[in-house]
Length: 495
Image (tube, rainbow, N blue to C red; front, top):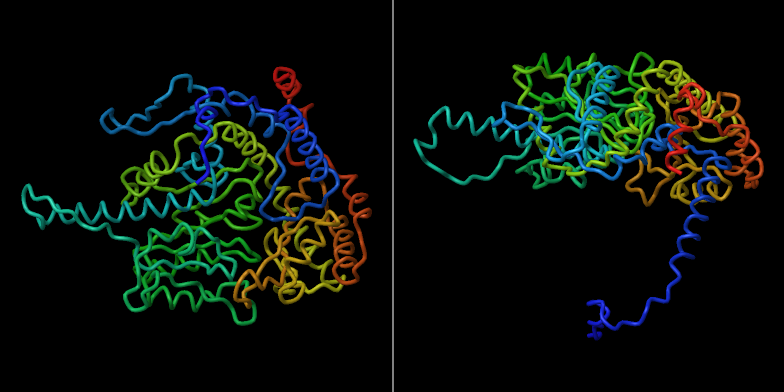
């Protein structure tokens, strides 16, 4: 066992530190600058789960709230008043209220929980709340029936969720909605199989990227799931929200329909889907993929006080705080608010262009000779994503070669593969480059460069840099001029 230098631990007569930390700091700053310039002015960024923030969102995110706390919860003993446990929080309290108002407008709903810091956390909080709510109902029913007797006390195991229906991860389902992810501690075990009680949506035989809705409804009738989780991370199609809602209502099944919109949150509306109008109970998502925001999460619902399920919303709020977060990154909360303003201002043009660009890009990639997955009758996609097959097990190597040439994508397993180690595809998104002003012409040029590299092994780095160099100003946001010099004032204040 190595000897421990107690003098060093106790601040005694230890040798002075000879590391040049100033040089380390300078080196870090230089590397960070180089990386920033590389990604923001020399790369074609096509990862569908990423988004550059506007200058306003970036600057607001590093202001004073980024150092602070604002824990709060509704306290029944004080009449349900939302009580903050720190002083100096009036500003960020107002920011949170304004953010909830903007998301309510955007999604068309009345309940917003904005304190979760990722989509994964949002899902975990909902799963925990569903279990909590289920056990509260069971306890109240037991007490009402007098089953435990007056004054009796008995420890019992909490019930987990019964059957859950999800999109399997290999068919593009979110990791957090899998038994290996956030769902793991909240779903029961099927006594017949000894495995988690999860049944996955079936997919169409001729198009494994799309749900077989008729077959799904038969499974819902068979298993009567307590929770149905829609949404994918590899997503080419709309989710069958309305069809599932109609089916569960006709079958009289007590279930919660949750739509994890992490990848498509920025597309909510007439150009894609309107989840609450179509019948979703709960919407979750991360706020930095197709949405313009900082890296946070959101939970939304439409329960009014007095509704049978309003208690579920109260459970969600309690599972967020104190169940999931303490400090919830107040700087990024402030940045997300201005991103929500940007989205509500520019959503129609942005969403229309994202979907048209994705369709045009997919057709251009196919026209250049690449194997584009999906249905060619709809130009391969209904979202911001395009899937390109590059050969069994070749996805990772292909993505690395593209990165060497300043084209940033990520490799992806497809539904006909057993695991991500055999990934044969590239998952590509158009939302970030759309915000930098690209249209179908620019995506067509990018398709040719990708084909030159992937199919012909031709280096394209210089061509990529030249194409990107003309598109470094972010669109669909407020300019410094429009903001009346306020950003310049903030930068001057920060020094």
